[in-house]
Amino acid sequence: MINNEQTPQLNILAVIRRFSNWFNRNFICPTIFSDGHIPEPYLTETECTIHTRRCKRCKATLGLGKWKHIPPPPNSTSEQIKIFEQYREERLNEIRRSV
Image (cartoon, rainbow, N blue to C red; front, side):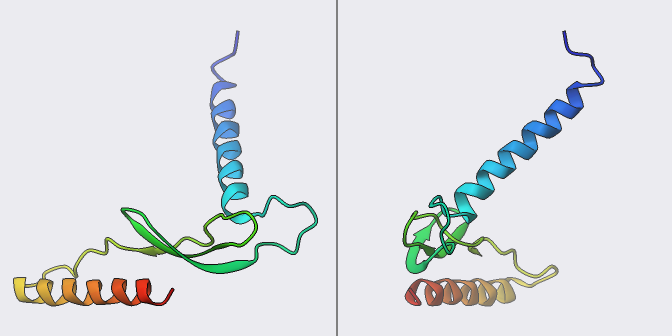
């Protein structure tokens, strides 16, 4: 039986293991003794981000991507919010066209 004192340490190890697996999948190319990732232009869009690069060998998306859901500045008027949303859409379209 596991003591209550060991349970938090096991949880921390599980979190570290999950982060390590995620990092290896997204940032380290699986080919051993390689020069690292070879980036190529590629557009992948999720609900929250836009990724514009991936590895040529392992096909993993590189980097953290560009965030799509940026809130408008606080205390903005409705006209300022419309201008900001239009600016945000133009920037996202510019990122999409860059690939």
